[in-house]
Length: 196
Figure (cartoon, rainbow, N blue to C red):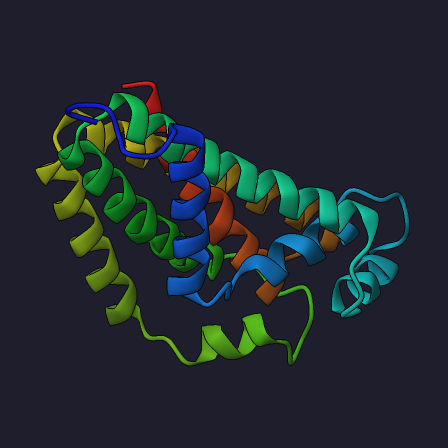
């Protein structure tokens, strides 16, 4: 990054990923684990929802967590090794912003569990919140130029793919799906910047 980093890029990426988790409080990692445990298995919709509500971590959930953090760490390592500080900061800012703005898209999907956290979140937001989020997100992407456009397209494609998959498997979305969408969008945007 404008010269060799003091630490190997892989170490920088792991430290960056750990800092990312610390700053966000690991808030959405539970959603990744629960979606990993519940979405891919071949059981009834009701059983999937039960599994996702269970606080215990299964093999699929652990695997999903590993790859979620691995993709994020690898992307940060790549940016540390081959990018500039400006590109790294832009990538991190847009990853966080685009990931959270996808929640407003997720709220347009039906809820899979009445009375769950996802439903509570939907009831606590207003159309003005979505408009403000869209305006800020689009402005940030515009400021980033072509990189911002590619990041926006990547975020939309990734989140829509996950949300449609969740609706097919659960009949709708849950708070866990919201969290998983945020996490997956973050590393998708970071990986997009690695290819620019």
